[in-house]
Image (cartoon, rainbow, N blue to C red; front, top):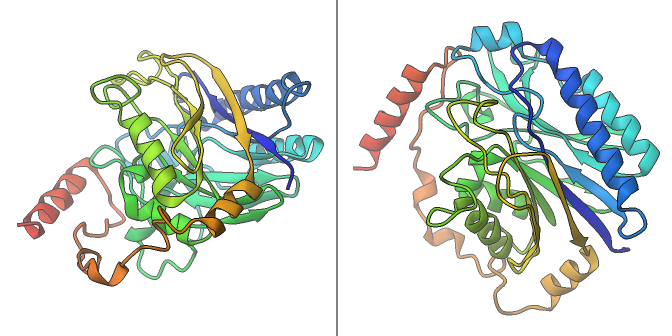
Amino acid sequence: MDLYYAAACQTDFAAPTSRDEIVTRTERMAELAKHTITGYEPFFDVRLLAFPEFAHAAPIYQTVDELREKLAVEVPNEHTEIYTRLAKEYGCWIQTGSFIEHDPNYPEHLFNTTALVGPNGVISKYRKVNPWIPWEVHASPHDIPGYNEEPFPVAQTEIGNIGVAICYDWLFPETIRQIAFNGAEVIIRVSAYMDPWGTAQPMDWWTSVNRTRALENSTYVVAANQGASLSHYPPFSWPGGSMVVDFDGRILAQADPGPGEKVVVAPINIDTLRFERTRRKGHDMRAHLRSDIHSYLSRNYLDAGNRDLSIDSNNQRIADAKERLR
């Protein structure tokens, strides 16, 4: 497999208040993708591009009903079609920024969803498993009885096996590890990670977590973070710092911290990753995992949310989970 480059692309949009505004975000991201591919062409073959959480729409309303009325869309949609045309033209894969998704199969729920788009269209769709509670009131697949879709899809492509997780998911090692055990070689982080948990000391969670998840799972990490100013997504500011990390936790490229549109590119060599996974006896934490001694996952902590998710109900679920920890 030839060496290729991945691009972590960050955006700086105002949060849309209606779905009619999404198209301007899509058009700008398609433009950024095209500029990145063509601009770097004399130097690098960019074949994988990732965009941040909330890049199409953010959960700016406090109720599911308002989100459904004003921002929710189905996925795939006319926006993913724009990315499909771009991917077909340039032979690339695009991990979209997230959508507020409505799925007719789950009419009472909304999801925070990102899609991996290739030359033949949407090839995988990931729904955030760990919403940032209490503030986020969209559902997790965990909340839906009988949910029978793969919650941690990994797409097999000619540029490697690609998985993804969204923002707060990365604070749960179990989530990223499951994606790795499902076969991922590159895991993309679609994120809107705010200050003070960003790129700056003493709480540079963004950088620390991305590096740790890469090395503990022997995967590349391509992490695209929001670079939006506070005025665009109050009450938080968004430090950017989009980055690419290799399977040993080395930072291969990182955008300077601070708001604004930025793109960084770095090499991905799946052949080297596969060789190292096969060759190494030491520091292969997947092969060394003693899963049967860890009993905590046999218990439930956070209750599944109901169809009427709200900030108040999220707070009650958190309180109940804390009681179970006693």
